[in-house]
Image (tube, rainbow, N blue to C red; front, top):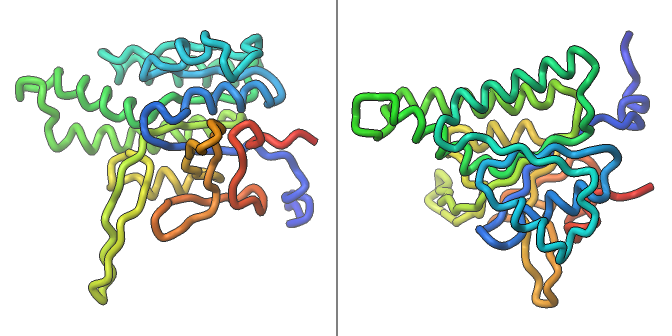
Length: 237
């Protein structure tokens, strides 16, 4: 049965967000703050091994009762990541998926771990082959599609990098973007409702840029905010 646009906009559909920043600025803290304010439980798929130490300090995130962390094997990553997604899918099919949000911390490291794993299985002394890059790229994009199909909120974190953009008329500029393979970064970002860059402010607080500028890749398809404090990313009704 078709839904009207008004019905669709009023429905509480799960969101998918990608938050990125330089190492140490606050990716893991952002996940904790989002989990603290979200309805239901949050599962963090830990790739880069920073979130447990960050949250254990209890400096910013106080309530850890609704956060579970599962480590992804960062050596045999391809098989372990595939196994974890399959397990989540089975729980969803059985009606036993107890999480309202699944976070991946972080996909930049996940990308590197998959490539390293594939390279170790090859014949080039651990260096990934060209085909390995294609396997990784399809794996990441399809993994995001799969996570979205689970009917939960999805929060991805990534490190940041800079890309140079050159227009046909010769003008050029540099832009901060999530640190993902350039061949799939637009695809990954396109599958997300929100892409935001985390910034550390002089007063010690952290904000999220939600509006794109020439120098920052960002977007917000959920509401009209151009930015917010990290702790206010989830707005309580």
